[in-house]
Length: 261
Image (cartoon, rainbow, N blue to C red; front, side, top):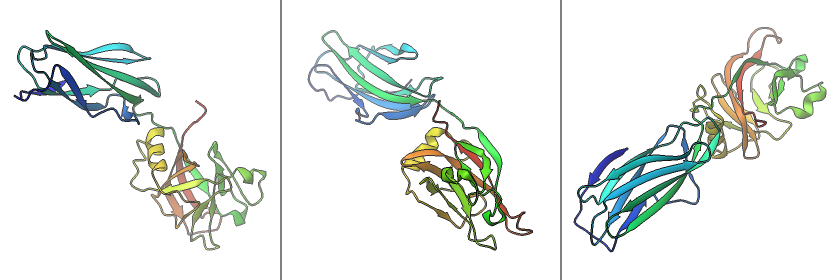
């Protein structure tokens, strides 16, 4: 898509093509269907650029012709809007080739971008309930089997407790801790409904990680992981602090990242 083309009287050496942004060491990451603008500038001392072709190649869709255009008048700069292809794979690298020529010479520029699947939404497990371990009730979970709640106090599974609930006798001062060196990030501005593996990982690895999360509250959003790799995101949907000890609990939902696929 061409959004604009301008004419300029400045001319520099034979035919040359410059594309902005320049190629960075770290590839630009785009989601399928996302748009990316490129600014093209043509320089020539003789005949103006007569033709421009833009092609893209990746190992999934092969080569595609994005633009094949002829110029009847001089064009010194233009803005091209690139649209990442819709893919059914998690990620792929695409090479974009810009090629121009006139009656005297030709010029080419290449850019590469990484494309990831759009809206790779995660399945949500709801209705997870953690209670007070002093009542020998389930207060711990593993991210690999989040539906299997166990009591860290007396369960043989305590060593795989990626997360467990710790609280005072009055069921206040609630906190999340771990037996597996889980790292926590409380980020209540995170877009939980549209969470993907990519959005979780991006926020997790760019945040300050904590060994524990204190003072839990309803609607807290907590990203979890090990090392620099995210495992998922938790939404605290409700906290019940009144009633019998067996009724006091933290209710939450969990969206986990499946690393086995």
